[in-house]
Amino acid sequence: KQEVTQIPAALSVPEGENLVLNCSFTDSAIYNLQWFRQDPGKGLTSLLLIQSSQREQTSGRLNASLDKSSGRSTLYIAASQPGDSATYLCAVGMDSNYQLIWGAGTKLIIKP
Amino acid sequence: EAQVTQNPRYLITVTGKKLTVTCSQNMNHEYMSWYRQDPGLGLRQIYYSMNVEVTDKGDVPEGYKVSRKEKRNFPLILESPSPNQTSLYFCASTRDRAGELFFGEGSRLTVL
Figure 1: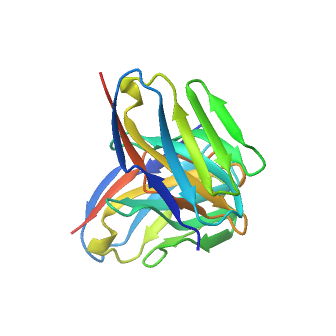
Figure 2: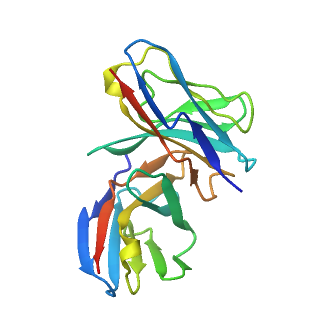
């Protein structure tokens, strides 16, 4: 059974720092992987979507990588800003069905 | 504007009183799904639908029903709500399994 783990559960860094969030999964038979952002009391917003055949995707200050063989994905945030404070979740799309398996998220706080 | 719309956004009800949470998307997406989000448990999939009249159970389907009679709508039905169904519910849609997932704003349900 696929398990998705996000470490750390919480992270607090000063504004301006570059940072990396981690997502690991146990079953490499994935279809794709998505990173989402969730603000308190709000819905989820898709940040980056990586298909299983891709190694990375970039959007602005965000870069997500995927290594299927090692069961890992990272979300790199460059030059962090207070507005980046949110919970970041990764979700793995399974090859065998339409289910998404979710990590528990990393709560990120950027201190001004 | 492309969006997923859920109603109601907030609801307090009593045990056993049937309720329906509606979900509608205006993007002509094939795939729709329902999630619940609980502190410490993360996002868990309740049901999903790959197309009209095609639905399947997610991880936690007990106590819920869904229907997909039209492509744009995917209501979540609680026939006899219980307090353990108190949660934050999200509806989501995507064009297909390779596409970006769009979320509604969420429906906070309290069952007394």
